Length: 93
Image (cartoon, rainbow, N blue to C red; front, top):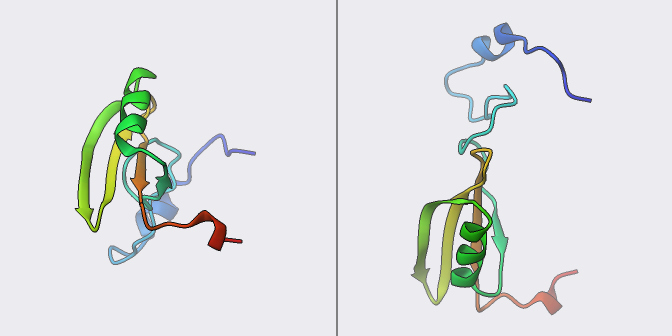
């Protein structure tokens, strides 16, 4: 169940050195940025944009044939994706 009110004093008292994302329940791009594994990053980008996402980070090669990109969903959340030709699904339990 989601809380109906936010205790701002807890958030405000957090140390500046803390790496924990704010838990105010608002959409955003801060905090952990997982990448969803996809077969084709370029096709995924096109599909997400067609569904109403906004381009945040265009697909680009980060080395060794691995491509990443990111969009913002309609709520303002970051959705990152990765195409990794070296990833073998059969080796993951």
